[in-house]
Image (cartoon, rainbow, N blue to C red; front, side, top):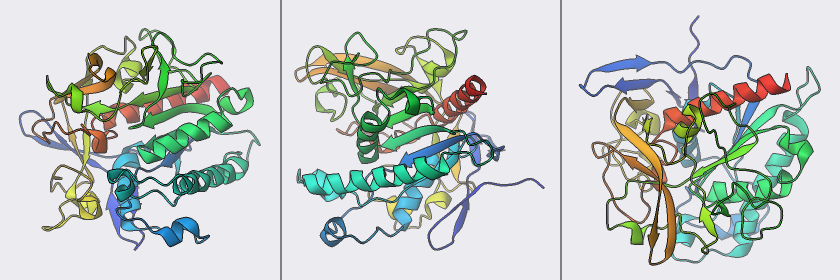
Length: 372
């Protein structure tokens, strides 16, 4: 029978992950999400900040976090369309709450607690689940994170993979999205002795042409925005720390097609619907209504996919605060319109959900072929 991939909330409520494709002429079509076919690759995902208020007792104590609707909702929103390509592992962690960021009051021990939770979960995954019981060999893994989760995964990559040849053999790719991966202006990584660069040996994912092999063991990083002229000074993400470095921008669609990072490519947004988010009249985006700055549609599927709507390119400019690099996304005005300091931060994974899923599938296939 035709299997259907569904997401499940902590209270048992299930939602479908299929999409309704919306064409430029307004007509629609149903797009099912293909089920995975015994993938040899896993996805280890660290979700962004969804806790609105801090819980000091939880952060300082030894009690484990409890799965809530918001963690499930953001996981389904960002990872739902990637589940065809990998087994998905999503550890709960005691994160720094949104109020800590808004008030500029991030307490270092609390940030460390969040990281150690993720690291402990990864070590358990690495020591048990990453070993294929049938072959005894390691499986491939894509590490994916967003915002706070991406910052923690960047540190995990530094400690567990960067410069470790044995571990890197299993690294299909790392998607460090909505954070800041720093590299030299003219190099894909630090090269071994650059303290400013985020990674010394893990390179940015690059593919000079469509005939070149799909890169694996590399980093995809970007901060998306729909900037209009004159708004470059207010953006919060993407500013270089000094004149010798830049914040990495990798356009997933450009890597998939093969070509320069600043090439303009078609994008395929996959936006969560009210059905996926369990929205209602008072809270259209459900538990994420205070975090997502757009109104989800009421389509019967989990996602609304927009065909031939948006384009993207890696852009750069000089500002009074230094060099700025970002993934410029054009064409989303009909979905949402904003020039806030956050740009498209909360929708980083969705502005080209189709491109991210396609790149993950291509990198998983390339890794599987190369490792046998």
